Length: 329
Image (tube, rainbow, N blue to C red):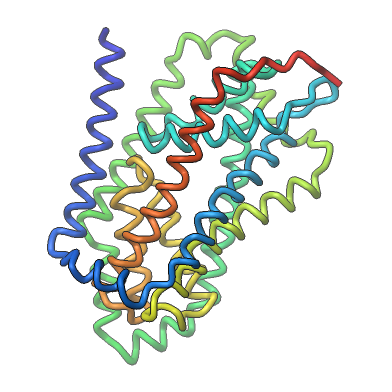
């Protein structure tokens, strides 16, 4: 009973943080301006393309995961990997970070793989994704440094805006909450009675180290690049849906994407609130005013969330009817 209460409390807390953040950002926004924008100058086809790219990125993620799950004695069905991945995104929209647990539980029911080993493979994937995020962040810092510095010198108010952003109480609060959450999860993990069992620990680390034994490493690299290209492209193609952002460069697209990616790290449903905040601030660096930035963030996030919710929901409903795979190589 206590555990159920704690889970519900965490769900309510995460949802409250997301709603409060979203309200804080859009509290003075005139939604009539959004309606006017969508009625006059909006190009729907670009957002539809972004929604398609979102599903393709999830497909490539499932194919990459499949490479990690496969062993000399086990062949995982690609459909089962895709269903599990899509279901995980659906669960993340309901309860933050629940997707990883759901994903591992689903694949362990449909394939000959333990939950702990599957969790290890997900951790190894997350490490690779973190490395990719750091590389792209470095690209933005190096590639935009001179332009940003010149722009700041010519527009001193931008420098003040950057300083204000770094010292913003909301940003600091999010970082503190993330730190506390990480410490808490690490503490709970160390105290977990299940993980104290040697067999489970070995199974977990077997999953983590499975990335070393991938049979098709170049295919793994290709899938990884495809995933991150599609993540970037989802934001970039949406620039062309609006007149105010259609002239922005590819580098601007990468910058907006990286800012938004850090917003998605926050433990709230679908990055609601933090993603919008980070995206609006990134667009402001390219002279996109706050109202237009809010419109862009709201439309793009809503579209991607909607297609993920629908597709992920369908996959979640299908999963219970999947026959467990008993075949091996």
